Image 1 (cartoon, rainbow, N blue to C red):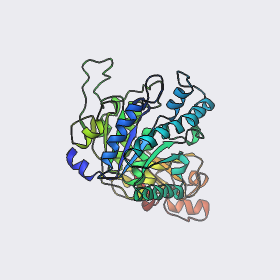
Image 2 (image 1 turned 90 degrees about the horizontal axis):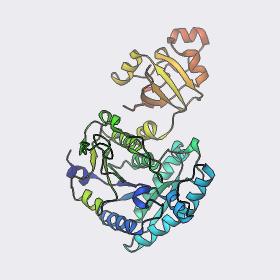
Image 3 (image 1 turned 180 degrees about the horizontal axis):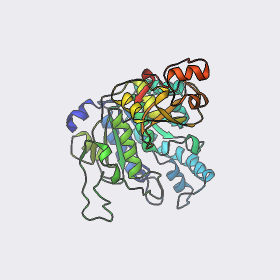
Image 4 (image 1 turned 135 degrees about the vertical axis):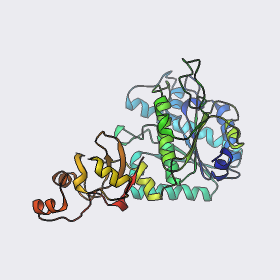
Length: 373
């Protein structure tokens, strides 16, 4: 599929803007950059729906409070987010109003997307905002988020929002030109990769470095691209610091790196199950069970389970991994971790003799299981 074909089908579009695109090295918001991005997004919105996932609240707070650098402890980070979020949204509101567009702020935590009901409510809210012609601007709710409920960074949040909306295109605007064969800051032979057909083959190119204001890095962006492409979306990673970059993308110019979809689009429920909700436990399975799941489309039976890890209840989402620990699928468990431990490795007849009953033949039924490879 060519870039032009991808762009023609791209509706809605999720655009993620990183902190280092919006703020200078001292953390102050760059109003001219926000003005330019707002004008470009407004032009895109003339022909399609757009969601903006915007970092920058903590970075903006650092600038407003004149701290000079990112705090290390959670309370000070949350205070920066509280101060910076209002400053960031005020700038967006002023700039988008010049284009007769009303921005709408949405703050999320991972718990909001873990819960199926809240997940669907978030989707309905976004769809309703589209009806009014608004621009949803989404950020993680850093003022209340703690490690247990954080997405990790806004790259992953943007990918999950794309899954939420079944968006065929995710644009990651960062402070680099795209994915390179090496680190261009230290390797003069590093070359830009214009198109990635199989993202699993380039994951080793990810650097783990982070900026002094943001929380992400190339590893984070590749993980986000992996989530989006696995669900059937395309991803373009480009340099948001370049003037007119969004216009260039939607003109079909070969800028940044294009990641092609890895599979056909998943259903709404499959997207939530595979990439949004966080597993409560792990079932390690043998090679025979792996073949049955991935190649034969069968359910997971207790006999193929070799290890049960974590605390989970019946109906919780669990991760299914091979014996090397590589996740291959996710699904809804028919049994708690206590019952699963008693049953693992046993046939149905052995379970019935040992426990006296077998409510479900399957540890995870095929209808409640989705591959993540």
